[in-house]
Amino acid sequence: MFQLRPFQQSDTESCRKLILSCVRYMSGMEAQAYPQIEEKERQFPLDRELALCYAVVATKDEEIVALGALDKNIVKRLCVSPRHHRVGLGRQVMEDLENHARNEGIKRLRLDSPTNAVRFFLKIGYSEQYPKIWQLGGAKIHNMVMGKDLL
Ligand SMILES: CC(C)(COP(=O)(O)OP(=O)(O)OC[C@H]1O[C@@H](n2cnc3c(N)ncnc32)[C@H](O)[C@@H]1OP(=O)(O)O)[C@@H](O)C(=O)NCCC(=O)NCCS
Image (cartoon, rainbow, N blue to C red; front, top):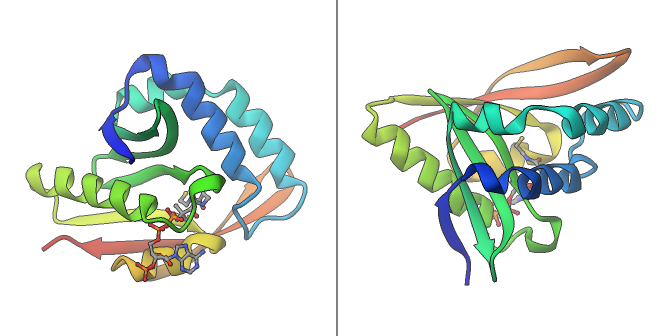
């Protein structure tokens, strides 16, 4: 039903739409951070960022419904279309990124998780390292740095 394939430059605007659809599902940030993140994402050179990563998309009937990327040992941009949460897509994308990392000889992955996603990452074998607070404009954003040893 879902197909995983490498990200292509022509996927950029669909991926941007997907990321924007996920922003309001991320928690741990002050309310005024949301419009700032959305504005930043609208203008962000996403194609250039993803071209420097190993990036995959999941599609359903040719629509992009999930995205994930690996920048060396850092997981970035994991998002699943809210219409398809909790059907195993996040896990599937993460397994693909982890397999790629193993093939590259990477021993440990790291990521910054918004608070809504911590339990998801715990479920797939990540552990909490330390909380991290960063600022966007005047707004505070609370993340949890998490990691997993690849066996
Ligand atoms: C976090 C996110 C990627 C999870 O993706 P998903 O496809 O819904 O997760 P899956 O269906 O693969 O879930 C895998 C396991 O984690 C569990 N899980 C998923 N989300 C969870 C949550 N919010 N709380 C508790 N458990 C959760 C599932 O129940 C499942 O457990 P099971 O195997 O025992 O059934 C998705 O909710 C999302 O895109 N959120 C918005 C963007 C975001 O927060 N990205 C995080 C990284 S920046």
